[in-house]
Image (spheres, rainbow, N blue to C red):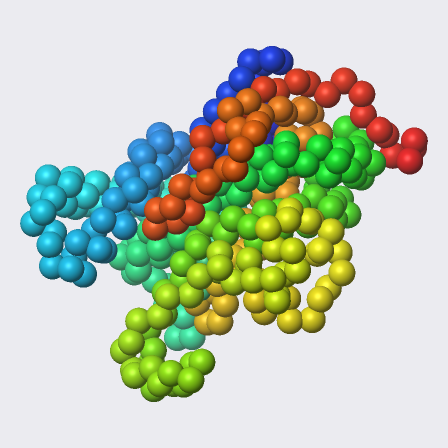
Length: 337
Ligand code: HEM
């Protein structure tokens, strides 16, 4: 994570503005693909896998909706293109699995773990099952969610310079000039609270879907089995009874553990379908933010005034944001604090 963040931010030039979403997507996408396939043998597949995923994620909303409404014929070219990309994506994953099987080496990545996994009877997964798991994981772990959270966090800090200063002070005193590692990450409390608060205000999965398995009463209504339910983390996170002064960006609300608050805080969903990547995503966002703010001060350009409105799609996306980087010249060292 640190290597990738450094590689992307290393190309920034002082005073030269950049598109923050593009840069953070590059960081999150590279980390995602390297976590899945770390082996050098698959390097040339990474860009192709990433391009396919982006196109699939971009089209999945339309595919699900038009197929549920029985109107896929409305967009025949798009439906055909979607199927073509999906089948190329499956082919790419199959080629990577084959390359791993041939090399027989363990690469300390998710694909190696899937290939080594055994069920209770000691049987490995078939190639088709491994492929489905890779696709499921990649689709769920889309770079956009992590990138969008990083962008929102940088935007919120730009709007709240007092909090940004405290975060930079924490990063300097905990890390000095060193990259974040496991023990130091645990001490970056305020930085982590900034990430939790960002996900409260702008949960990437702003809608979570459920189907009723057995008749159930909810808020005085009997819901029959098979009924569809839509839960909105975005709306829940902004209820004043649960989060006082909900529109305010207040990372310090996470310093005091309020009973009940955790249950209402669901940027990663809840229950048996809860996000599998919560710890991974939180770690990554804190690492990248810490590394960026350790080395750079960023100032927003396009959205310095007026309300910022999220782009609502199947997922909640950050708006375009241009920032200007300045390298940090003076840092507080651990000895000074
Ligand atoms: C900021 C980043 C992320 C956010 C906001 C997020 C959010 C979510 C949400 C809301 C769900 C649906 C939960 C539900 O229905 O209750 C979900 C499911 C899932 N997520 Fe994430 N996620 C993120 C990153 C990741 C990453 C990095 C991975 C993998 C390493 C991942 C893997 C999954 C998987 C596999 C599921 C499906 C779980 C299931 O249906 O059993 N997610 N995520």
